[in-house]
Amino acid sequence: FNKVPVFKVAAKAAKRSFSSTAAINTAKVAVLGAAGGIGQPLSLLLKHNELISNLSLFDIVNTPGVAADLSHISTHSKVTGYLPDNDGLQHAVSDASIIVIPAGVPRKPGMTRDDLFNTNAGIVKELATAAAKYAPKAFLAVISNPVNSTVPIVSEIFKKYGAYDPKRIFGVTTLDIVRAARFVSEIRGTNPKHEKVTVVGGHSGVTIIPLLSQLNANFTDEETKALTHRIQFGGDEVVKAKAGTGSATLSMAYAAAKFTDSLLRALVIGETGIIEPTYVKSNLFASKGIEYFASNVEINSDGVKQIFPLGRISSYEEQLVEAALPDLKMSIEKGIKFVKEIK
Ligand code: NAD
Ligand code: LMR
Image (cartoon, rainbow, N blue to C red):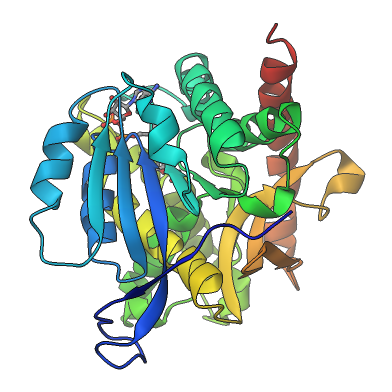
């Protein structure tokens, strides 16, 4: 595999270690589902990222308006909006170094993420097919739920097109880490910026496993259980509060912008030592038939460089892992089967 495309431009580099007019490497980033609840604030945050040369916005509706609006912001990236007509999807993804996918329907109260499978699997399949055909070297950051199944779907589609490289396909679980840091800081009275909580497993309910014991925070058993539950079901808190109008969008946009920035730093400026928690093809639980697992992952310009094991965990966390595995296995198999059954 060749490297993904990276462009060199003279850019004003804010808050980075470049001089203000230095030539820096930049990249095209495509957001698929860019007019949605996540897509719009995510695109806004990405418009602020100086490592992006072209911000390419695709959705089945409203991208011309969103793109026109964002294009007036005085940062250097060029914003282009695409709709499905005139091969819009193809143009949106071609030459992209990173493709972020927040397309698909969100939950309503009472639904699980898996209840979204029937609608979102087809959407993700279609977008992954375009990525595999027209941007086979891109990094893919999958936000659409159920992530535990949509990442296997994207992988299977890439296999179909002979473009599969597991190092480049990421399920975005950053929101679980963002939430964990915030919730822990509320109890410890600390700055959430400094709380680094490792969260492993997958992205739904019991598959979200925060390793709170590694914080050495001396939480009581009750505090550990309550915090674990809040992190596992943080998404439900937002779904309930939004009362039928959707799920987390703003915190998710923040999380996805953070994750995309890490990918960009690894990819376009070759920064080393970047570690992000993400749901990827992983050998950690392969012996138990689990092909994908979220854990801390070192990312470099080729994608996944190293997958970190869980480290020392408490007996309570061991139980959480055991409880997560059957659910994860089922979701992964469901995603794989979905693609295999496509004629
Ligand atoms: P939304 O309904 O507000 O936006 C979704 C967008 O996708 C819409 O603009 C819609 O037009 C677009 N879309 C639908 N079909 C498409 C297609 N074929 N091609 C391109 N775009 C298409 O929903 P949202 O709140 O932005 O959530 C989007 C997805 O993200 C949901 O599946 C949700 O569950 C998921 N989500 C994941 C996380 C996570 O942590 N990974 C967090 C929050 C939400
Ligand atoms: C979240 O964790 O907020 C998202 O996965 C959206 C949801 O359905 O809860």
